[in-house]
Length: 155
Image 1 (spheres, one colour):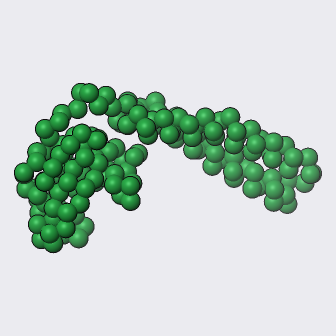
Image 2: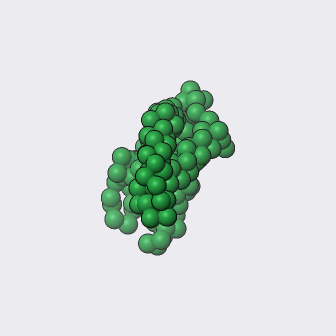
Image 3: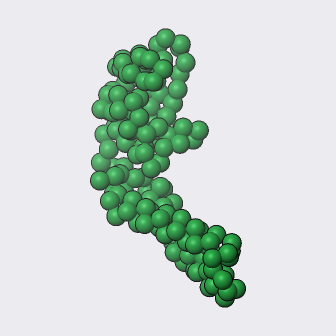
């Protein structure tokens, strides 16, 4: 079971609708045109359309599976005093003094540039369930980090 924000669930639904209603019919048309050109063994357009079809079908299947096994997070039921999904967390690396702020999200929403950290990442896992004021030690590929949780708020 995966948990998604309403925003991400809607994005995935819109992408799936676009693929099914627009992209896939366009690819079927391209395949039909390529078949009409004759010899399929040396038909580049046909092979390209088949690759595009396979890629689109794969993406459709993946998105359908994500939506089938996902639930939208009810933000009213999330704790406000400790870190959970959709919590906005400000923490400081005690070794470097660098302060960072991220929203904890599922791996389907992760985007570090947008300030969204996966709950499955080493830091995300270490922060889950913790409260402001706590110090967390976490093992990351670069070594061991000591993080002070400065602030926790609802996303």
